Length: 196
Image 1: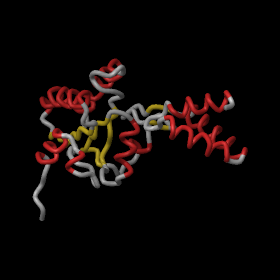
Image 2: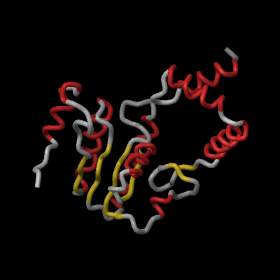
Image 3: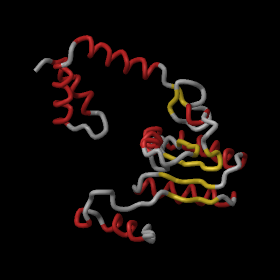
């Protein structure tokens, strides 16, 4: 196999959720593309990375100093959703359910990005103090580090007398009880709500 192609596969396999087999499928699919399409893809990737900025208000990815969500006057400024990374914000936005503002932590308490997160927590506290918030929604992954960060944030923010909630945890749609771990099942039971 061509050494350059092996290098492509190695880079593809570094992407989240992409293993060796998926990297191979993607790599071979890329080889089948027209040269103009490959050039356009590579140029788009280079431009996206070169033009990437971090929003000064919420730390989302942006092309300007302030992201489109922070600039959007129709968003509910009384709601603030805390997420770990910009891609989590993106996934929440795809649901089109939430219309408030966001705050990206940039990591979790026990992650290698702890220094970034500590700096951002100072800015989060300032935002909670200064903004007229009614509710703070914590939307972190239900991992050990995520849970530790949720409790840390709650202890840190409860003194500001804001309503603090967290997204429900539990079974994802389409899953089955026999495949779920006990913690997931317990969280699903605790987060249940009355049918109307």
